[in-house]
Every structure is written in structure tokens, then in C-alpha cells.
Amino acid sequence: MKSTLLSAFHSATDLLFPPRCVHCGADGSLFCDRCEAVSTRLGTSAVCRTCALPSARDTCEACFHEPPALNRAIAAFTYEPAVRDAVSALKYRDIRALAPRLGEFMAEALPSTVRDSVDLLLPVPVSQPRMRSRGYNQAELLARKVAELSGIEMKTGLLVRTGAQPAQARSSSIGERSENVRNVFEATEVVTGNRILLIDDVMTTGSTLNACAIALQEAGADWVGALVLAREL
Image 1 (spheres, rainbow, N blue to C red):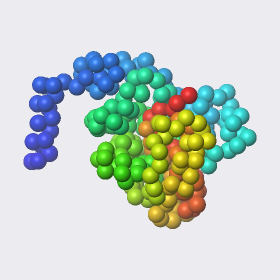
Image 2 (image 1 turned 135 degrees about the vertical axis):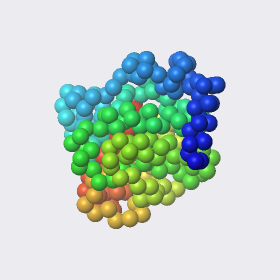
Image 3 (image 1 turned 90 degrees about the horizontal axis):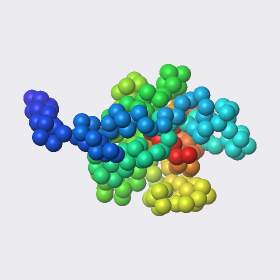
Image 4 (image 1 turned 30 degrees about the vertical axis):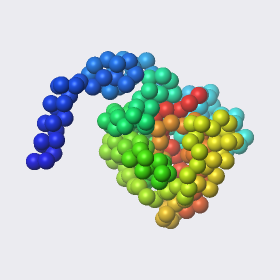
């Protein structure tokens, strides 16, 4: 009964105040079809399988010479204006209703070979101060939709932040970002033999995801990959 009333309320609200695209302002959707069409999708054939950056080879020069802890990285889009505005709206403007649509894009980008071999989905955790101020973890909202569409179990609380650190968006260099997340993450359970897929909104240098991978590998994970909405080039 409660869910029926809530659904009716949202339907009535949409009639009175139809959703508008967070990028272009078009009526009808929080992220419209046109903005989706002009956003560059990152296919899996012309990118490095380890860092998701454009590459003519499966492993780019940087990852070949200095392999990261992360075994695989997959991104749905490049981090361009429309997608950037969608991430900002979800992350900083409390427009949580965007998460299912963005999560659909991520699930579509997930290769079946990866989907069928993964044991767990883990959203990258946020710090407790940020969780208290924001009220939610945007990575968890995205992970819920990916879990629903992929059939992979999502688990929270298995990976935690042991302390806060400066916002990565304010860090200018790769070295600074890596230092920010050094020893920040910790696995709360042994995950021996598990293949784990991390979920996050944006991959910039990969420092946060690599720090997560290290923590999970120290807890026994056999393989750690990442699926993100967008990759910054």
C-alpha cells in the first residue's frame, strides 16, 4: 500500500514538475537521449584493459612498465561535459534519481566475460564525515543498479575507509592523489579467492581504485577490477 501511494505521488509530481536534463535542460529526463548520444562511449576494443585509457594495445606502455594493482578497468564514457554535469548533479546536488539511469549505462558497458566471472560488486566507500554531510554514497547508488541488471551480488561494509583524506578533485598531481589514499582503505573480511569488481563514478588517475585493490588483494582477493561511469582522459 505504501509503495503504491509513493509511486502515485511521484507520478503526480512528475506531471506537475517534469524532470529536466541536468546538462541541457530539456524536458522529460534527468539525462536526455540527446546528451547520451553526444557523450563519447569508451569501448573495450581500443582501450588499455588495465587503466581504460585509449590504447592500440590491450596494455598501454605505462601499465606495461609499471603495472597497477587493479587488474582491469572499464568505463562507460569519457568524462565530457554532459556526463560531468550528471556526475556533479548526483554527487553534489542530491539528485539521486539519476543513479538508476547512469547505472544502466555502466551495466551496458560491462563485458559478459567479466560479468560472468565476478563474485562480488563493491562500491568504493566514502569517508564517514562525507557520508554524514552528504547522506549517501553515490557509488553505492550506482552499484545497486549494476547489481540488479548484472545479477552480481553487491556487498557494502566489506571495504571501508580507515580515515578521511583531502578531496581528490582538489589534488593536482598523480603523486599527490596516490599519497592521499595511501593506507586509507581496509578490508573487513577475508576474501580469499574472490573476484571483485569495484564500482565508482569517475576514474581520474586510478589512485583511489588502486588503493582499494591493494587492500582487497591483501585480504586474499584473487582478482580486482573496476567499473566506472566515466574515465577522465
